[in-house]
Image (cartoon, rainbow, N blue to C red; front, side, top):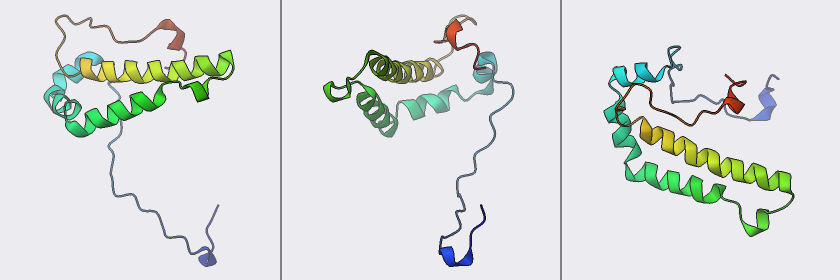
Length: 113
């Protein structure tokens, strides 16, 4: 969709330049990259912890959000997903004792990758 000059919509020019996700996304490569310490500082920062608590608290089901069993299951899945994601981020902040550190991947999600 092209804009007309009469739309008066400013052009959106993002200022944040994100680098692409590296193709080699193996866990061992992460630990070899030397970014573990930087992530640890970020994850333990006050801003991150507040954002984590906010997302986790707001993803929990409430009495008002309880509906059908399917909707309830979906709501619980979202809450569990946030908990798993934050736990996995914390795992990435320290080197594993062995090279086979387990992350919350289950066979039911293998079809996505």
